[in-house]
Length: 317
Image (cartoon, rainbow, N blue to C red; front, side, top):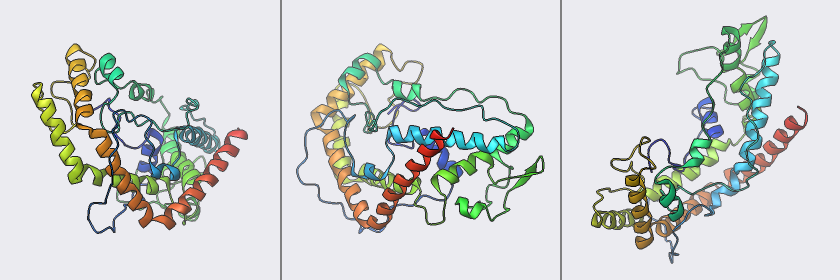
C-alpha cells in the first residue's frame, strides 16, 4: 500500500532484473470474453500471508528463487573470469522458505503488524541490495555489455545469442556478448533455447489475472465498502493499494501511521475485502491457466529443468 515499502504483487528482485534483461518477452493472458468469471461462495479471510494461488505451481517459490539467484551470480562470475575479472556482487542464499509471502498482496491485513509497524514492511527493507561496487571501464563493459540504442533487438535465447553479433564488443581480444555477462547468465539459466517458456511469461499470466481482478465489479464494490468504512473514522481514501494520505517513509511507523493501519485492517475485516478479492483473483487465475494450459505445462517442465541446471552450477562452484 505505501509507495516504497509495501509489498504489492510484483516481480521479485531476481525476476525484475530478468525482465530488464529479457525485454519484450512477457505475454499476457488475453483471449477471454471479457465477462467476469463466476466465483461461487466467498470465504471470510483477513490475513493474506499464506494464501495459495494456482499459478504458483508454474513459478519458482522463494526458496527456488534464491537458488536461481545464486546460480545466476555464479554464472556471471564464470563469464567474468573469461576476461580476467571477478563478479563482486555475489548474493548469499536466503532463508530456506518454500512459500511466497503474500502478506501485502491486498494491502496490510495483519493486525499485529499494523499495531506494531504501522505501514512499514520489514520484508521489503531486508530485500534491499547494498550499493553497487566500483568497476573499472573494461569490467563494467564485460559485466553490462555495450551501451546501444534501446530499440536494439537483442537475441532472446542463449541459442540465438551464440550465433549473433548484435550489440557485441571485444575486450582483451575476446568477444563480449550482448548485454554482457549479466545477460548471458540470464539467458543460459532462464532462456537457453528459442522454445523456452520464460518465467516472465508464466508470471505475466498471474499479473494479468491480478490486474483483471482489481477491475472486477465485485472487487470494486469491496473497495467502496472499505472506503466507506475508513471514511466513518475520518480517513479519505478510495483504494486500499493507494499511498495512505499523509504517510511516507519518514513517518511510516508513527502513531499516526499505526492508528490508520489498525483501522485499515479493521475495515478489511468488516467488509471481507481480502476474502472477496482473493476469491475473484482465483477465478481469473483458473481461467487464464485453462486458456494457456499447453504453455504453462511446458513452463512447469522447464522450471524443473532450470532448477536442475541451477543445482549443478552451485554444486560445481
